Length: 282
Length: 310
Image (cartoon, rainbow over all chains, first blue to last red; front, side, top):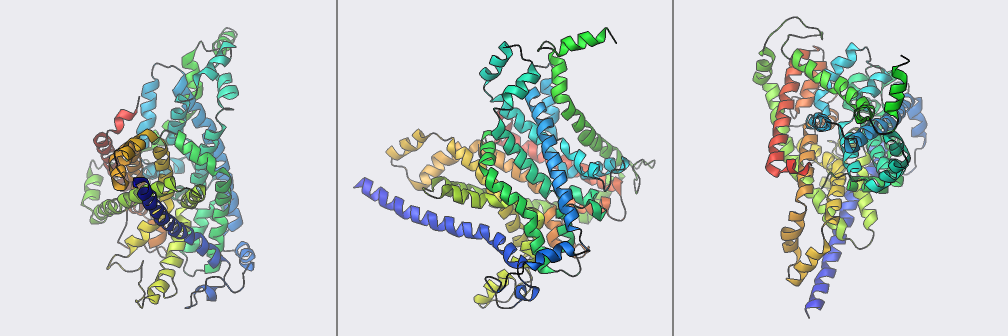
């Protein structure tokens, strides 16, 4: 009796749960649909008083128009974004990976003090330091340069913190086997630890790439010349312009998120696993 | 030279010199952090005591004048109030929304991976792109905007979402945009936390006849305490950094409206606008940093975050 009753409420709860899940999923997907719908419409169809679910004719020509528009350097911005994101991701993985391993595994008298210096910067949101960082970068003469856009973003305390937490939990036996063969810290790290941590490295790499590609405040402050714009700045310029070409704007936004969505579909498993193993939620 | 070379080679061999190897592993990161984080912060503290317009090597010492100016500036004070209001909206709503999604997805029997992906996917979007969709398509103030079309189906008048301050509809636009962007990420954190809860706890509860809300209240939520603390702290710190959506949603043609301006947007215009007023901008940044550090410390102490570290 009791079991029948429970299974019936369970089934009822299950149906409710799926209804909520499906409705929620539709709401979460809605903005992506709007992006594509508007990007492939004509202006008059977007601004028509009658809401149309789908454009009567897909305007693929909008893509060519976007890249031929001389007022926004779309192609150059995409190239800049890609360059910045790739360089930052690779460099953060190397710099923070090494630092995280050193903090987790190499006994050093002041290691704790060093760790606290790093953790302290986590309390100070990076965005709050943009005024002094801007002053430093302008003193170096790096305004509107790739150096100015890339180099200050290479030292990510959060990535180092996550790597340290991960390496603390790395199985020591694997490293000890290498050490018995007389391999030092350097060799152990590159030949044993890195090949066995590809999942976590992929996770941190993806998160870094997304953060770098989507960054807005720093590129806005540093990329003053249109030749140094990233794709986010180009989009924002579109958005705050006097006259807005709606289809062009939406197709540009679709192109801006496309690389990340593709990356997401292929690497999602790693990101989820990485977040789970990062120790943020322990 | 000839005498140091072999000794360096010997030091590098094996694991005898730990200090040297610690330097090789951690040194590059630490050096970058000092140059690009600590030096700017100290420089900023220095600039905040000077009258520094258009210059980073000021000579005109004004003491705490900049701090007094900033704290007595109604615009800066209102920007701090805006932040508090924003955090009061966004932190609880995102917390509840992401926890709710995690509980739903965690108990889904089929298509679990699909739903997780859908809710996580907006993480790939930037604030600029989200602002664009929210401002020009969903919450467009004109009649053909999606929300106004839906309101029209119910015979309601269109609303000018972003261009009126009374009633403040723009909060709905700003909060929903951010929630869409970040709920999925925190959902993943909660899902990870849920997976660590031992099934035996649920079995014991089932034997005791506990169901539904009771299980949630007495088992799931207490077991998620550590995750909740981390999520709350991250949400608060990230709310403090709010800039992108305010800049993109509320600015029109460079004319920034005087309402709903979080501190970061205020500082951006103060320090990097036409005046290039680094003195006041730096003083504002120092005030904001102290405020954030204080709130984070109080919250960490209050929620027992410090115990997590070894």
